[in-house]
Image (cartoon, rainbow, N blue to C red; front, side):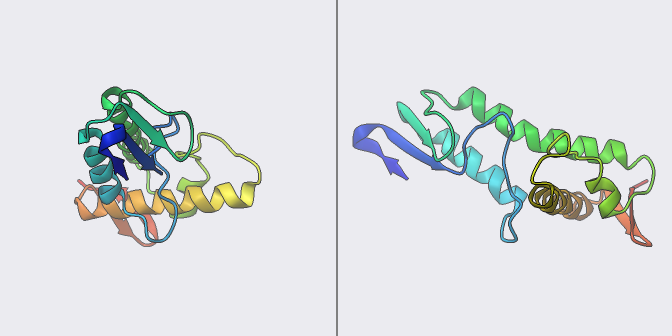
Length: 139
């Protein structure tokens, strides 16, 4: 939500955190999230207010780093897929969260959901394929 007279842009869940974007719910789409980051970064304001974290006075650098988290996750998944792995095996690697967290049931659900979205995205780009329930890098 943009308040041009006040020079404020409310970023909602585009929070520019170091963790990066969270897209673990059913309706989330990584490419649409990337597009939202670009839109937010392109709107001039003096104050950028996320729903999580502190307000920012500039988003160019934070937006680039925030987007990069997605690409880094893609790379870690591709690196893990040097050997065929299933979704649960990839989830066990904690590629998104970096380590187990509590409550594990919640974080494991989110980890699996976000890894699945990466797998779908990478498969749509022809970078990986699924064979017998395992994901493999495309040759």
